[in-house]
Image (cartoon, rainbow, N blue to C red; front, side, top):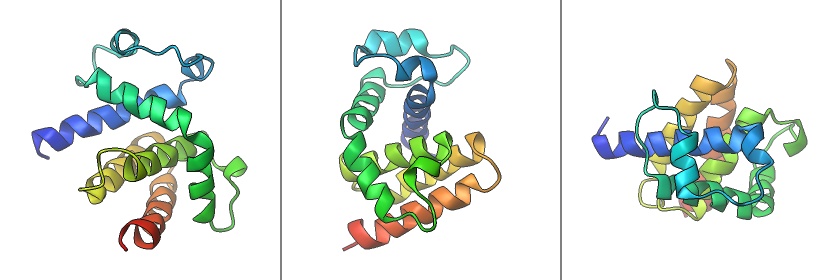
Length: 143
């Protein structure tokens, strides 16, 4: 894995952790770059706090739009039934693919999100997340 891609993975992972965290979920948009650096675990790889903050705020600010996009690609599921891990990973991925800086390399984003689903989800999470993102990519981004 190239160093730049590995660093991007670290940023995605930290953003996911913050979005998933119940403590952060009650936070009222007062996250700062300094707070990200304080919240981070010293045992985890380093991140770019500015990029993590942009991802977290982006997902929070566009949550309704992201959920609407995700809903279009769910089969036999509703967004309310999704496990939190899957939902937060999908929100982060769709945000990055649609509004973030990953439009040049969507495969990297999708692969990294699938790897996070393997790490944090159950045995079926990564397949589900991959299927939704693949469908979204093929129908919306690959045009």
